[in-house]
Length: 489
Image (cartoon, rainbow, N blue to C red):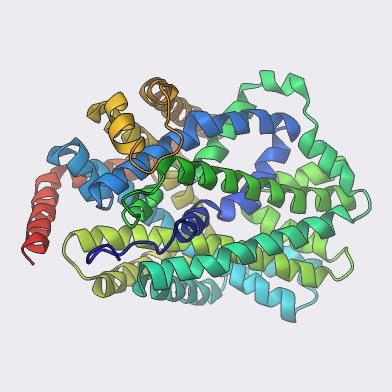
């Protein structure tokens, strides 16, 4: 503790929590799929480049804002940009909260399949029927409740005894499970075809703009940059914490986890399937790959049930560690309004469970929410860049990033990236994804209730933004009153 404020007990406690935030389901089921669909080795080149053009700059901004303001997203934007911009922080917080509603459901699926791998040896033989039966039943609600209860309990215990303690268990365990998965994967016959595919680039593919946009999308959704999560964890850092080093370690850990997951999954597909079939499996979508194809492939290998259990345990640990940070983000916002942690987590946990039920009951609804709020993260990134620009990017870098305790200062490349490249990347990604939706649904892209339409994004975004902008003055006043009361106490 520093005074009455909770802080992480050590740098490693903070780093493990940051890695838990960054390493999630997107690393384990999305990265192998997207990398395979976009040429394997060729995809890795722009993906690595976007470390410096997206992930590190945005995480530096988040870290700097959180450490300087000691407030959640709403209060942080209000302090940094002025009270009339608090609605931007409210948007960032809500976007992550909306993702939490269905992310908890997905995490619950992992528990179900972990149990199935242990007690049911024939899941892979009937993977499609098993998946359809499970998702059309009431069971996802039960597992959604279990996950939200567990995540809420961890946050209830606080920063050190909850978040830090949980990630000290989850992150090393996840690392061990992934390494075991890689060792088993690489010892399969024909597995090295998958390794060559993953690391040997077809240079011609670098001329394909889609490879670059998919690499940027993976970076945006995988690292947690722009979500507001690292901002929230930065609230609990010590005064002399090294912002730059911690950011680099977080991104390096996230990327390393993605590559390890790729080595654990892609060779399995190439071992048991012809190249065309392996690519078909990778093109089946996140849920199709993880809950239909992989269980089917695990049944083909000796001790397949055991390794299926390892896979879903690793996926569970990754998803849970990220879910914890999402719950804490919203809990922290409530705490900034003067609500005690224990009461705040009861509110957040209850609301998240109730509003996650539609996603638990309907895959169509879940996919719609994933589409809407996954793309909403692009707006988050734009808002963080705008916050740094309004503050003054050079001033932000010198005052909030290159602070006491940093060993390696950030140079002027940061200024140009934040001023020009990140806003451009946000706009280009939104245009690209919207154009994909229009081409895929030429007659219904504008309809507000289609799963992956432009209309559904604009409607839901518009409603939430309108609410926050209209009530911005009330939000700011309530935040100021809570801060004043806390100071008096």
